[in-house]
Image (tube, rainbow, N blue to C red; front, side):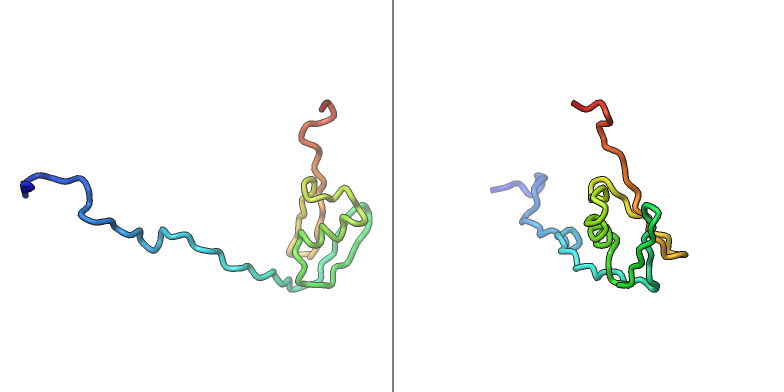
Length: 100
């Protein structure tokens, strides 16, 4: 027989985890719809974007066909909401010119 005054560190039965700690599946994000037509300014050219449902990454992929330096790894797209202008900024290589 177990002594009722003896303390046990184990719970009497397994406790299910609370619902807040269960993994939630993220809801599919709807693409943003912009309220104006946008313009891409790059290399002295202006490219109008009339499709308001395209994301910045989709626009970058379209521009990459004409400008191969706008790859996903080396380009950052900056968007100015006031003017509707998108500026692709090309970043340098990580290792620099001395990589061997």
